[in-house]
Each structure stands twice: as structure tokens, then as C-alpha cells.
Length: 245
Image 1 (cartoon, rainbow, N blue to C red):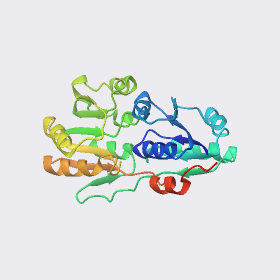
Image 2 (cartoon, rainbow, N blue to C red):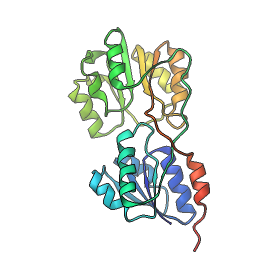
Image 3 (cartoon, helix red, strand yellow):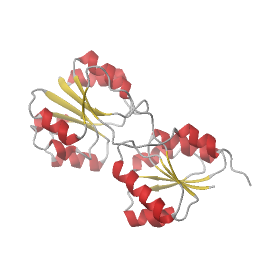
């Protein structure tokens, strides 16, 4: 089967590997070069790099028998565009979605970065933002010297930090997921009082963040996932099975 798969996530890589090994013709769309690098070891894939405009996506989808959305659980806009493109093209769509984590005891949860920033405005102490570069503007009203930002090591991510005037000494440009030990070391090194994260589930190292925050005495703050529904990646791979001639 000719399959188009969106996503530079763990689920996307696992699905791409399994489907390709089972004889399917798989094209994977990733937004960044980092995503492409992680797919390089999987044989038989076609990889497209770069964000697609809605019209580009709609034209691309029409070339395939099936589309799989394996983007990040928080990629609400991308998932919406994929759904719209598939609906307009009449192409079947399946959503690979990692399991949601329960909210840990003692964790504060907010619906958005904006709500989180409003709460943090009334606090004191250093903040570690481990939510990526896309929503940094929500924290523009906070004292930038309080903000320690963990982002992907890309030009775009660093530029987003610079636009917010984050001190370069406060920028942690690394690719995760991170172990409990490394999370804890960062929290202690920078005297973090508030650790802001998203629910990346097991593949995103969420459990390690929970344990590290407790050990370091930092308040864990969770930005809740947007509402979504999907399937486990392994179920999709099993259902599609091996390509038959």
C-alpha cells in the first residue's frame, strides 16, 4: 500500500519502520532536519522535510491510498490540517496517538501556555520551560532572567529564545527525551522553582520529569493536552500487516 505518514515522533518512527519492513511504500513527512536524521537508519523510506502549507498538504495527500497522522499529541493545528486535507481528498486517515498520562499528585495543571504564564506572573523563583519554542511568546511578560528554556538545537529554536530576550546562559539547546538523572541535575543546577512541561507520555520522558521534579523540590506544572482521539501505533501496524501482491 502507498502510505503517507506525518510525524517526527517516536510513534512515527516505529510505524515507519514496521510498515516499510512489511513491504508498504511509505513516505514520511517531518517538519525539521532533526526529524529526518532520526529516520535515516530506516531502509526503504521516502522522507520529505519541511512544514507544508495547507494547499501543499492537500495536493500531496491525493497521491496516497492511506494517510497516518503520527504527529505530537500537542500538534493541534497540524492534525487539523491533515484531517481537512484527507477529507477534501477522500483519502482514509488514521491517527496514531500515544497514551495520555494521569496527572501526578502535587502537579498543577493548566489548559494553555497563556494560563500557565498568568499564574507564573504572580510567583517568584526560576522557571524551566520544557515545552518547546513555539509557545514562548506566551511568557513574554515575565522577567526573562527567570526563564530557563529547553529547546531543540536548531536555528529556529534559538531565534525564538532571542526574540524573547532570554539570556544565552539560560538557553538549554538539547534533544530529548531526558533521563530522570539529567532532568534532576538541570533543576538543581539552575535552582528551578517551577518546571513547566507537556504530557509527552512515556516516549516523551514524562515519568522521568515527574520523579526529577519531586527529587529537586520543584513544582511541576503540566499544560494539558488538547482533546484528541486515536489508536496505538502498534495496533495500526498490526492491522495493516504485510503487503500482499
